Image (cartoon, rainbow, N blue to C red; front, side, top):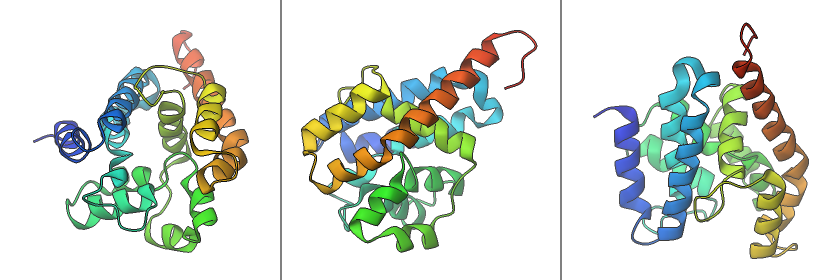
Length: 189
């Protein structure tokens, strides 16, 4: 089974029944990843797989620390033997180091999982932070606001997302600039 088919099957098995809204979000994030094909070169399948798997750590069947990037990445590495680059993207998606810091888990995350190439980290962040909880498209500003409202500004997630907002918006802008450049004939990606 190829990487993306396996990723969809695994994510569906972990999210669709216990967390249908999270599954809808993951499908939307994967759809956004497919739209980045023009700037991903040979990494399009890798990005789509990471996108559909990025939130599996929320699944009650694998959650252990309560920090979904770490739980998901550990599961993918230890139980499923998924491609190391996908695992690293899941581990570090959407400024996870900042949230890990809020949770006292930064050293664990950094020690266990190297960062993937910055342009791929940006691409997955773009996909996640421009997709609503129900899988639709949105802006990163609206998404950050929605997260703060849903969790509350003083919660771990609320504090983290507010700290991460400048980097989230900057990453989204970098990806949008790369997409615009890719649309222009003769422009470097």
